Length: 485
Image (tube, rainbow, N blue to C red; front, side, top):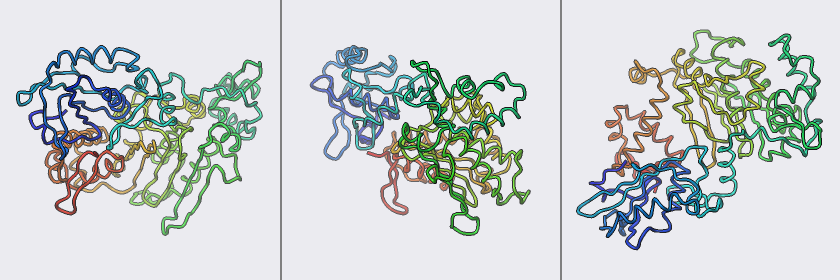
C-alpha cells in the first residue's frame, strides 16, 4: 500500500499509524487494529518513529521476529481481539535503510465480523478518523451489531404491541393491490391476522397472541406508534417547482394528514413524482407514464432507499425532487460493496420483511437487479451517471439521479465501458492509494495519474472531502490534497 523506500515522505492519517515499538508490542496497537478493521482498513508500522515535524523515520527493532510471534499470539487470543481478520501475508518484516521494521496491513472487516473490539470488552470498539482512533459511541456499536446479524432488523417481534397498531385502511389497500397482481393467491382467503403472519409482518408471541414485527409496524403502522419503537423515524418528500425555489409539494411522516408508514409513503411519493416528472432535455417532452422505464427506475430508487434504510439511525428518509435531479437519502450505509451493488446479481437488504412485502405487490427487485437497472436507464438516456455517496458521520447513503446530459468529454471517457460506476469507485480508490503513497498531490497530478480530466478528478475529490477522507491545503494553483490526518 505504501512505498517503504520513501517512508520519510509519509504522515499519520486515517489509513497509516506508526509506532516505535522499541519497548515491545505497544498496547495501543489493539485500538488501532480495531479502528482500522471497523472503518476503511489501514497499515500499522512498527519500528517507525514520528518526528516533531510529523515525518517518519525508521528505527532498528532488536527482535522483530519475537514481536511478530507475540502479535500473532495476541491477535488470536479472544481476550485481546474479538476476531483475527489477518492472514500470513498481512504481517511482514521489511528492511529499510538497514533498519528492520514490521508492516501490518489491516483490511476492513467483513460485516459479519464487525464490530471488532479489544480486551474482551465490546465497549472497547474503535473507529478511525483523521485525528486517530476513537472509541465508538453506544449508537455506533449497536449499529454494527445490527449489521452483523443474520436476521434483518425488521424481523424483531414487537411483543409489547398488539395487532391493533396496524392501519386497517392501508392493509386492505395492500391486499387489494396483491389480489389484482396475484389473483387466486393462496393468501387471498386468510384473515388479516393470518395474512400478516404468513408474510412475516406479524408473529405469535409467547402469550399466544399476534404481535407485529418491526417490518409490519413500519410498513402498515401509524406514525405515532412507529416512533415508539423507532424514535428517529422520519419520512420527508420535497418537490420544488421547476421555475423557482418554492416548495411545490412537501410531505412528512409527522404532518398528521396521513398514516406516515412506508406503504403509504411509497405510493404517495411515487404518484407525486409521476404527476410532476417533466424531464428536461427529454425527447418525449412530457410526463412519464406508469410503465415508462425512467419512471420505473425512479420508483426503484425510492423503494431501494426505503428497503435499505436503518430506521434506528438519525435523519430519516429524505427525497428531494428538483428541476434537473432527484435525490434519495437514507440512514445507513451499503451492506455490500458499491461495485457489487452496481454489477447486480447479489443483494443484502437491511430489511428483508419490508423487501418481501413490497415484492409481493410488484415493487422492488429481490435479485439485486434494481441498482444496475437504474444505471442502465440513465446510460440509455445519455444522462450523467447516477452518484452514490456514503458518509460515516452521520452514517447515510445518498443516491442522486441527474437529468443533465453527459458532456462530450465524459462520452469519450465512457466509450466501450460496461460498468461506469464500478470504474468510478476504482478511480476513487486509486486516488486514496496515490495519496497514501505520495502524501500530497495536486488535481493535475492526479489527473495525469488517473488519465481523467481535471474537472472529473476535482469532482471525485469533492466527494472524498465530503466523506471526511481527503482534505485540501492551499489555494488556487498551489492547492494540494492529502488524506485527512
